[in-house]
Image (cartoon, rainbow, N blue to C red; front, side, top):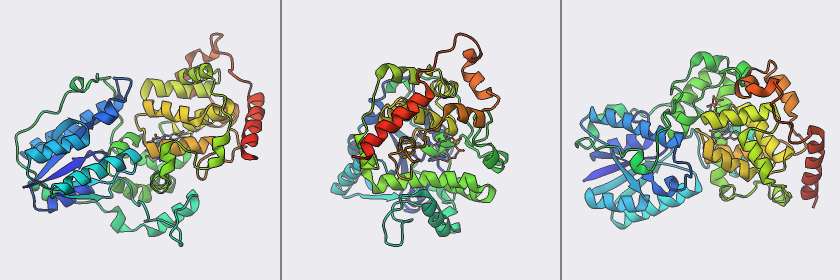
Length: 432
Ligand code: FAD
């Protein structure tokens, strides 16, 4: 008999909650990863940095496991189908995995749990990707917070060493099931091609963290951690990072709390995962949804240099600085009056650190429809944002080199006119 450890957003062997419990179960542990066809087959572009990232992370884990005489069993398919096969091939007594709060994942896990239980196996899942989940940080009356500041206060008040300490998986590494190394399916066999993407380091740069408060809003400076993708796929442990964050810089720790906050919101309000505005009255906004303008936004051709620089950075690298994400999202929803869901979907396709909860939260924040969002009448002025956050135009020149010359696009809208139009359209919806 064996235990299966099902890896998903937790692609590491160290400090992993479910893996720790699996190894301690006393059963030989077979590490499993499923390339989920329900997700992969929906990706239109077959050069995908995320798939490449996962592939590299799996190969790294595979090397570590080979050194211990074990191997990950990597499959492709519908997870329920794959588990049906796995349960025929191994004598499975237990399945271990970590929580995933996205609506699709919740359904998927429920199906696999049911399958396991029908066959007499125990399915156990654990909190791993956040510090606090679900009902762990709620108001006195047990209801979820919908405003960040009081949530973060309660979050900090609850924090102690217990929540920050690592799971010492390495003590139990002799518990892996012994088998010959199995190949990880190639990207090509999954229908993908390598982009040859370069990924940021999975280490927190402590000097960066100390200067985070002063530097983090300036896109020309490498002043943020770039750990988004590692947090997304679990190649870094949130406990390790929050431990360092709480020692080094409170502003940085706050960003990690925003991440917990949005996961908590998605868990308590699953309707935001089904395309709904968090504040329902915002679903009455009459979006203009001009497709030609949307294309110009996507391509970084709006004639607003800071917006165009951001979109081009995203298209070229899969990354965009947070300050600029806020600016381009505000511009799309407010200046162009294009439905935030269009922007959300475009980011979902392009962002290396794409995460449903944070992306949805970020977009609804910008559109004004989110919990604790910017009030709708606060409309970013892209010129003032540039003066404040890219005063020398360094970031802009990097991504929009033609900006200084004659070849640059004319502004797609006039700021003052767009601002007025936005206020009228939002007011019409919200005053119904
Ligand atoms: P750092 O500034 O170094 O922050 C450290 C970590 O904290 C990040 O890696 C991230 O995990 C977390 N974090 C930081 N800011 C936020 C935030 N506002 N909300 C939630 N978590 C945060 N973040 C994503 O991880 N995935 C997304 O898909 C995503 N989409 C966004 C869309 C919009 C419209 C906006 C405005 C923001 C979005 N963010 C998203 C939040 C934020 O922009 C990124 O987390 C950050 O830019 C990633 O860069 P970094 O790793 O250098 O962040």
